[in-house]
Length: 213
Image 1 (cartoon, rainbow, N blue to C red):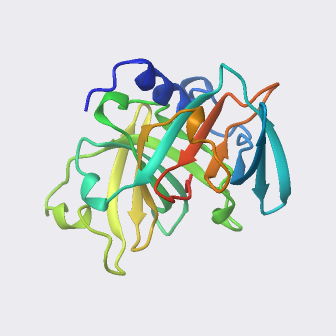
Image 2 (image 1 turned 90 degrees about the horizontal axis):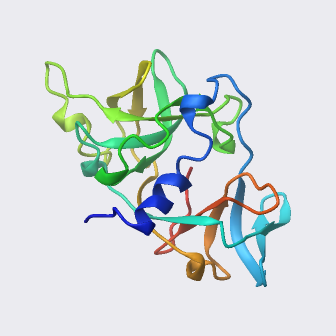
């Protein structure tokens, strides 16, 4: 599906907020508002978070992107993905994986601090890059399924570096799709990117998905 239109631009910007090219790897992570929409009044969106309700303002400039269920079979060599991760033993452990459409390859590529609370005592990192081609022996079966309990190893390449990431069974995997303000309805799970006077970007869960990033 070709997305080289207004929706494509929205998706590209929505997941590329604060370009990694201009963000230091050790810069403080951006703060995101994660939760479920409980009410919408005009341009005020109330999001029920684990810390209580948060009101986020939207505007005509707010961009949107949706996420739907993805599959490990989509994570093949040459695919551009974003992986929220924490340090592991000689590799990073994936907390969530976001699969970008081909038209959005290269979006915000890099490796930088993130604020996903699932990282626990570890600081989470977001790594956006391209899945490297497997080296011998073949790792084809290590990237097509996370159905069992063994972690699957992939190498992400991005401008300035590479990172080995383990994707364990049960790791949330989602795929980016278009979305709009019309998708903001009570009960929907969202992630609002750092607001100024109004939130610049909102990720919307579709098909009941909770955005894992």
